[in-house]
Amino acid sequence: MERLWMGTTSVEAADKDGWVVSITPSGGWLPACIAGHTGVGMSQRMQSFVLDETLNPFNVVEPGKRPRVTLTPSLALKEGKPFLSFAVQGGDTQDQNLLQFFLNMVEFGMTVQQATEAANINSNQLWLSLGGTKSEDRKPRPGQLLLQSATKEEVRNELKKMGYILSFTERSSGPINAIYFDWKHGSFWGGSSNHGEDYGIGW
Image: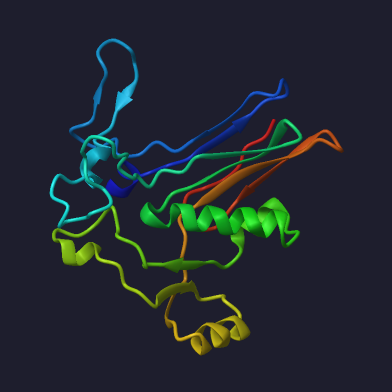
């Protein structure tokens, strides 16, 4: 049951008046607190920042730098109107997974549900911002890719030809949730992957 009370979640919401939000709260475990009497939750997401650049040279807290966090709630607009509200859970793979989701819709013509469920690729060719207890755990692993088990054989073969070392898992992404705004027909389309406790509600 502990997993139900810890970690990241995401919420995509929209209403008939055009209000839309994309939210990815995370880091709410102790010692998180509320900022004074504002009701605003202050997570301890700075757990992924460092003071010693030998631990992670790209996530140092110092003047002139903006340390990286993994949270990526996203809104895409088209012709000044909301086109997509989308988010995912999953640490350092969030940007990768959401970009692939977005391209599956705008470049490859998938519906929002198809795009949330599509097989994706994760790269560890960057310094990780979460996980591990020493710098070795977070170092880049060039040439290594994690693929969803459903990845087609021809894709696997092409990546191997390029020299990548492949590993596979049934779940290569956290739960992706999204709303697509179909202005032509005056409707919203919801999409939720099957990678966690994610679902859509409409009324």
